[in-house]
Image (cartoon, rainbow, N blue to C red; front, side, top):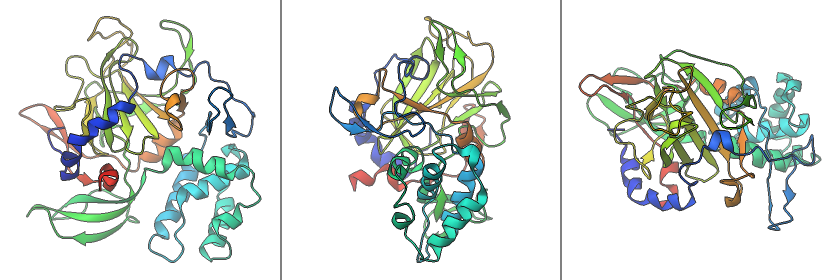
Length: 376
């Protein structure tokens, strides 16, 4: 974190205001929360009114959208950007969610192809297409809470010789600026990053909900990615650091809130002795793609800086926030990240080791307009 974009530096001074919304320090968010949560209206995932607070907001989300469905919807979004009818990938996925009742084992490419063709040709709007779908609005809000911050316009640094490793279908327009070696380009596309830096091996499987027993019996509310010690961990989305430090369950960990307040990203079991990227601090701003820490196996100990986890890995968790009461306690909503991580694999942050400090730094900086949009 030695390098920040101009946007990040401007935001840092005021980002601490967001800490008023941050979860309390010292909690093991991904392991201890959510176990008391029960789903009502089984099979629909509909929102319900809580008898205690009288508010109407989503109380439960199961995110089973497959990587293949996300890739297909995202490609339609890219292909129609700048055209008369621009297809929104989250709206397309919400359409499928409402059609399938959230069960993406039923996913077929032709189902989305047919819907995209009707929309792109202007035969129907998304509102008309989904008018008879009782739960479309629920899925649009639920899937939007997961995905809305991941695709959009931003600026990225590119080398004088060529562009960074991106999908050829991403659309770029030249923009003045940068240095003799690098320049800035305006981009529309995927601005969220995979949680592990490019070029570093890892292995994983769908382990969401698997039983854990340290301390007490509970479900695993995150996604484990096994890798080598010291592997750079990447900020998936731009936001501010809400949690930083030791927890007996997660060891050295980082919690990052998205700027729209809907997502809380949790990275745990970081490296002993040097867990964090240099300069990372609570309240600080990070841009998507920044190095924030390093894989380790700390945790499962009341004593700080102890390796009590059997295998080196990153615990990556994603919490959704529809109401401030859901930030901590039995009302927390954590979703499976396995398919999401597979989708994000197409966009990994390129990093380079600085020999003098031993730190890994991103090669190409970015400017995410969402970082400061509320302060414009």
